[in-house]
Image (cartoon, rainbow, N blue to C red; front, side, top):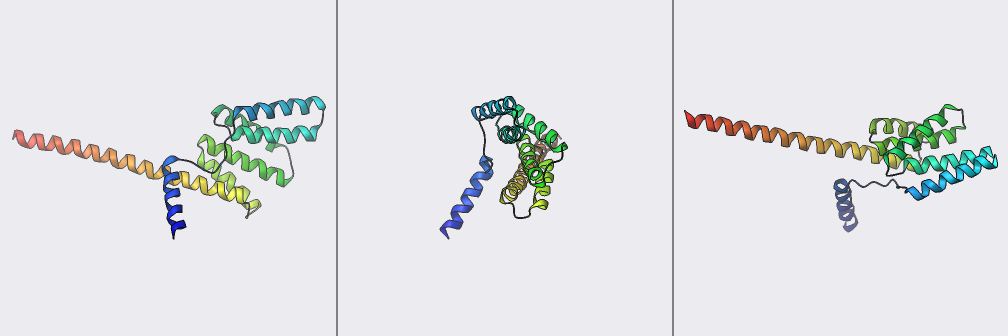
Length: 170
């Protein structure tokens, strides 16, 4: 019972704090990944370069900087155009979904994560991301309803005040 109560308070707390379970990445990691890509390019190893580019894409879409996230999305979309094994495409689609989630495009993110789940129905990362997206959409909807209700309440209060003031004049 105590565990259920703890879970409830954790979920309420995360609802209001906006936290999610998707990791963040800082600029130092991105710089390290960029260095790895340069070194792999200089070495001439195409497989190593692809691997380093995937790590860089991961770091970019997990960044707190909007420009980095957009760069990661562009890299992943460009790499999806070339044919790749389904497992590699699944990973790229997942990272794209994370990128779109981080940039606030929740519907695009949900479409991509659904494609990942179609490829592998029991993929835990994709299922967690889907729940995170749905929770964010629900939270934004609740906040939107609250703002709308507050606005209508304020308009009603002002209108009521005007009507009361007019009735006193008569």
